[in-house]
Amino acid sequence: MKLETVKQHFEEQFGSPAGVAFAAPGRVNLIGEHTDYNGSFVFPGAIDKGMMAIIRPNGTDRVRAWSVDYREKVEFSMIEEDLPKASWARYLFGVCLEMIKRGKKPGGFDTAFAGDVPLGAGMSSSAALESVYGYGLNQLFSLDFDLMELARIGQATEHNYVGVKCGIMDQFISLFGKKDHLIRLDTRSMEFTYFPFRPQGYRLVLLDTLVKHELASSAYNKRRQSCEDAARAVRDNGYPHVEFLRDVSMDMLLEVREVISAEDFKRAQYVIEETERVLKVSDALEAEDYRTVGQMMYLTHYGMRDLYEVSCRELDFLNNVALECGVTGSRVMGGGFGGCTINLVEDALYEPFLDRAKEAFTREFGQEPKVYDVLISDGARRLF
Ligand code: GLA
Image 1 (cartoon, rainbow, N blue to C red):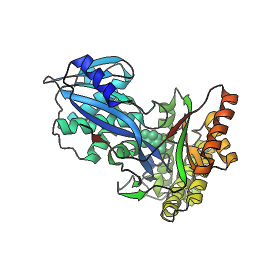
Image 2 (cartoon, rainbow, N blue to C red):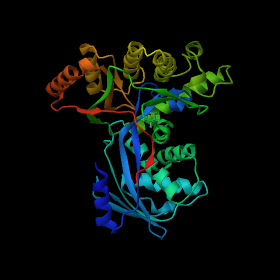
Image 3 (tube, protein in one colour):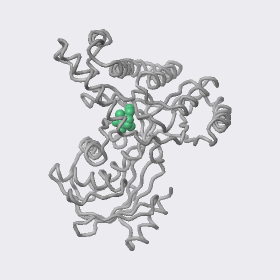
Image 4 (cartoon, rainbow, N blue to C red):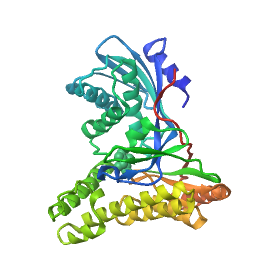
């Protein structure tokens, strides 16, 4: 999607001249999945795809928004009763309302936006949308939120206006991302470290199954509930310091095996193991040991498939093709229930792997998976 197109749409809808343009990216996550609401670590990077928005204050109290992708216009006032019906507009609405709850009100504005992060593919199009408006409105109306507050505003938008009880990873990375760097974020303390990431001889590629799980948000919230229940059971079992599963070891979890459901046990086991994997990957990245990084990615896939149960047949299929082709690392990325696999592929294997994946997937499921090459890029920014 070109900025020119968004500009054209803006001018058609609202008349010239266009306002100020902002962009915010989607993300990949190398490892550390479903750990961010367990007080643990994640390892994301912003990508060279995301959302673009043109915003112009309109001197009223109302917002008039045009979605280029949906060819749809929505207008609202920034009051709870005016919650828009269109799901895309709830993200904008939520960001405005969450800003107001924090004591700072953006003025009314006209806006057009578009994305080149596919919706629902696990690349965080929704966080990109929250971030582009959080960042843009903050600048245009001099609201003086810092980036961390903007990330919280995006997260609260998901919780309160979309119904997904997400962690902080996606909004954080969309704002803090840096070119050629992944970030290891400790979601309890919110301390973070930039890790240079330009693996010589490897490429990161996403394969999109095009599967979108209808009930993904309720299934996501259910996983989170399981984690909180398991952590509470351990806390009540003589470990009062336990706040999150981050604080729980496998031995501590085994002590409550009879008390919690078999399902909650599996979910918690996955989170405990995933936390260990993220730490191993940190060390491996420092040593530029991509073999270990890749092995951990496969183990994450198996954990998400067998213990956390957020994979699906299409994702498992692509993961298996990667394994058969000798791809260094491959796994389901993001929340799961469809979307993409992330693959760390040696340059020489790139073409044969993609050919084989496309051919085998089409034979099995009747359509090609989509391929996204990603470059690790900067976070939210002003374009002009
Ligand atoms: C979604 C959520 C994130 C995170 C991932 C899984 O992307 O928005 O907060 O929980 O799923 O790691």
